[in-house]
Every structure is written in structure tokens, then in C-alpha cells.
Image (tube, rainbow, N blue to C red; front, side, top):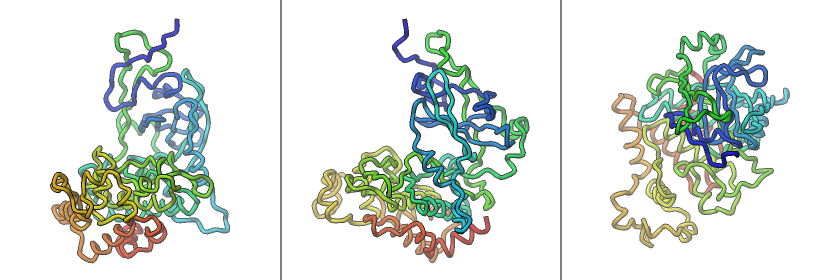
Length: 419
């Protein structure tokens, strides 16, 4: 008789949910496997709810790739966007400088396994995401500027090709690997970064493992270094994870279907929930990402708070929201009276204004390192961020206008060019 219930495994820290190795779930993979007759699995790079990502050596082309193996029978949207973004541009048109700042889709194939058929694709591998390396750490100021410019350039390129990224935040911004990485043999890779960290998978109750799960779980490899150790030559970002990307010209993504985390989500997703989102929603998220790259604290709370609390922070930081939104905001009485004054219980939880947030979340930490931001740069930076965080989407600058802003041109671009 077939077991109907979900098999339970003993928990292993830092790896994907092992219970998802079931029909319709993850494909079991181990170090040393070869996928599609050519991709030798060297280590694991990471995992998400819908895929596992592996560092593999392409034995045909003798280079490393990241192989994304999706859960079974899923229809990943990401490849469509990546195909459009990595297509070679016609020789007549000049190459957009952001073209190399999004992952190049290299190959696409399927594997059949005990849990179903899995779509897989390979992209250029990267070393780490900005969230894991900058948590409670600061990039040197010139590095932070260069990363910010590169990120804006990647968004401008994405928009120029007719796509909205839809999920810009530090976990989806990776750092490129040096080109010399491909010269490492598997043996040299392990000598430099350590052997893969594997832990035997066991079932609760000690029963034998089914074929659905791998015999060993692999803890993701960390190829990066921490923010404070970055130099300008490391400051090459890669905007990744296009799973939420969409093309406004051919599909309507309504505000209510926005999956950007609340701390980085544009307010029209809530207040114009039946209206299609477009490029300006990326500009709002880009502003929150640049703020975090430059400083130590996010501009809005990244803790798990109610979306109405995020709305109240928007007002605290940026000032009054559009009147029609204010009148329709059902959560308002929890935070403000009808005149816009914070109610008693909310007063001590108020979020600081943009200028104060800059002092607390950016400047205070930078001064400790003797890396403070001068007044003229601060004014240009806050002017840019304030415009990018305009409540009304049509009032935000485009990505190309962001690149032409005073802060980008005078401060960020020179450091980016030196990187």
C-alpha cells in the first residue's frame, strides 16, 4: 500500500526543507552528479521555495555555471525574461552598458527524476548576495556608490528591454565572480573554498530513505566576503532572480499581485490594487535598495510588521500621502487621527523623517568609521531618494533619469568607472 502521508526528515540547519523532496517538489541532487550529460555538480549555491541552485562545471566549455533546478512540473516565468535580456543586441545598436549586469541565460534543459520532470537552466554564477554580506556591516563609501550606480544601470537596462523586475531588494542583488574563477579545477576550487559541506539525510523514526530524497544534504557554499572587506574592484553587481519580472506592454500585473516584500514595495500596489503596475514600482524598490547599500539600516522596517504599519512609516518618513489614498486607508485610525497627527499609542513608535533616518541609519555609522558623507553629497543623495520615493508613481524619475541625477553623476559614477 502506498504511503499517503508526508515523509518527515530530521531537520538540518541551513538547507532547504527536506519534506519538499516529494512528487512535485525538489529534484534530489548530490555533489558529483552530472546533469544533462555535461554539468558536473561541484557544490550548492543556494535554494528557494521553487528551486535549488548548484555550482557546476560545464565539462564541454570548461567553465563554471549556476544551474537552477526548479521544482517538478513548474512553469518558471524567469527564463522568458532572461532570454529577452540576454539576447545579443543587433549589431547596429550600441550595447547598453547595463547588458552585462543581468545574468546571461546560457542553457535550458529538463531532467526527469523520482519527483517528476524539472525545468533547469544555467546562468553565469555569482559569489553572494548583498543581503548576506552587508547585514550589520558597511561597505566602504566608494564601494557603496559604485554598487548603487551599477544596480541603477542594471534596472535601466531591464526597463529598456521592456521588462519590470518586480522584486528588487538586496537578496536579489548578487556580486559577480572574478573572471579568473573559471581557471580553477574542481580540486583547486575545493582547496580555495573548502570541500562541500554534506550532512546525511535521515528520516524521523529511522526508516530507510525513499528515492525521492538525496542521501546527503549540501549546505550552500559561501564564495563571497563581507561588506567591509570589499574594494572597488569587487563592486560589480548582478541583478538576479527575475521570477517576478513581467512586461507591461504584453501582460497586466495588478497591484494586488505584487510579491515584493512589504519593506520595499511601492505604495500603489496597495492603494491602486486594481491598476497594473509598471516601471515606477521598480524605482521605489531601487531607492530602498540604494539606501541600504549606502547605510546600515533600511529606510522602512524590514521586520515582519503589518502592511499598515509600513504605510504609517511611509508617512512618517516622507510626509503626507495623496489625499484620496489617505481617505481610503482603512488602517489609518490605528496610527493617526483625522488631521494626520499620530495618536497617543503610536507616538513613541514613530519612524524618523527622511533627514533624521539618514542621520541615524547612514551617517552615524559612517562617521564611526571616519567615512562620513559631506553636506553637498548628502543633499544630492536625499534629493534623489526623495524623488524616487514619490508616492505617485508618475512623479518618480525613470531609471535613465536616476542615472543622470546629480548624486549619480557627481559621486556614484566616478567610483563605478574606477571599479
